[in-house]
Image (cartoon, rainbow, N blue to C red; front, side):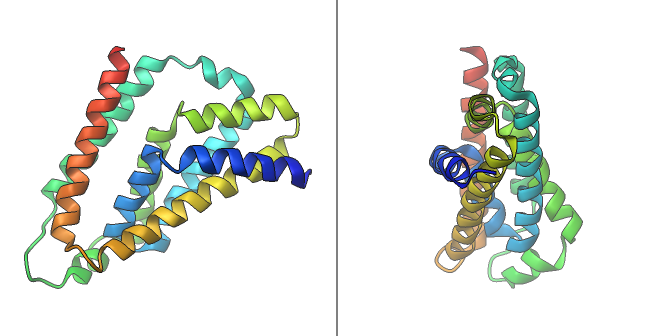
Amino acid sequence: MSLAIAATVFAVIFTAELPDKTALASLILGSRYRPTWVFTGVAAAFAVHVGLAIAAGSLLALLPHRPVEFVVAAAFAIGAILLLRGRHEEGGDEHVELYGKPSFWRVAWTGFAVILVAEFGDLTQIAIASLAARYHDPLSVGIGSALALWAVAGIAIVGGRGLLKVVPLTWITRIAAVIMLAMSGISLAAAFS
């Protein structure tokens, strides 16, 4: 285990993940559900991705781009539809909707599934695979990558919670659905380019 390699990998992956669609997905989920529940699912999905990237090394860069983008586009479109179909009554107790209905497993599974699909074949996963192939130190690369991805997810989830203090849940839901539809369109366009 090399702390220098882990720190280098952390810096690279953290910077690459900040503007990514999965950070946005974490923010949206964090604005709607209990942060610890969301983080559990998101962190597990990132751990799977790090493991896959480490195991596959640079071969992940060879995944077919088009099918991955189609799956990502579908996941974002389904997410937008589910957001819009939810009940959002004005003036009601938003915390009842946030905390009363979904179970831990449902929220964690939602976070896991969204991130798992959205991150598959993504730039950061390819970067992790490349770093693993370059450094030949899977433990250092894995730890640095996982910590970076978890840090970005944590920041995004906390940001989502802070957003609720200034913007009503109904508006966050509508905005999130529009953003997810836009991300679906971007992924679909990328699949055809």
